[in-house]
Length: 360
Image (tube, rainbow, N blue to C red; front, top):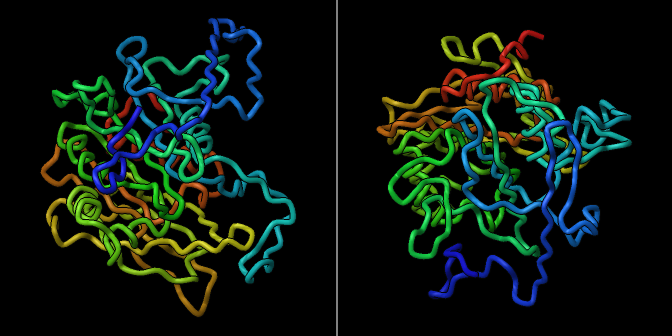
């Protein structure tokens, strides 16, 4: 099949590479946690099998709210919490690990959601009553079988589903979009052109990523991507400094993050991150607001300052929130749960979350 991703010279890219063999299996989990597979001889630990997603999945019991996690980061990120052997002066002087652990960004978010809404990856623990459910769409990126971001608007003519129906109905109450640093398979022009339709129809968007706003609103950003970031996420690029690799971000007074401070670590065992310094977009000066600032840098040469997170309501029904850092830079599952839960519950209206996680 084909998809209108990054169309070049009128020829759409293939979702599946030519000659690719795709093997499918189905996992079934009953209400007491017993698991079965079809076909029964599926080797689920083999790289021949992988989780795939078909959007949209149907709404689950009791009309619960739905969240879509899009992992658009093509490699694992550092799991600071579970890495060991930290050397404070290692690497370039900001610290490094002798035994670094890496994890998929989507799993970091899923563990945070499980702290907020209950449940587990194996389906053996029930979610909290009335809490949201979530789907995961993993964009594998270059060199893999799947290179397409999720379709935003469904196509009735081709039968391809999407985040928004052809009639404008949102399939998901919130989308959490994960980036590391920008790559060629992230925020395609067609994706950025269609995402406003999701927010215009009441959907809420939370985007993560370092150097993403720099790309999107700088010299190399396309019109479609730049417009989405500036008009719908209310943000543009203000700059970056090396001293921002190890710091905090602190919530602003009067926002849902007031009184909260979160650590960021961007050395990543020699892979230095440069977090985006954000600025309020001048295109929507009356509707965007800064939620948090970078603080407490350990670099005396380049003292940290500047906006770390911006939220925007624009003229759309839904909120757009963008960070200047990637999800892997946060230090623990609990800190990710506190931050994501604060945005989901206070700004996006997602109910059934255990927001007491921020009390620790």
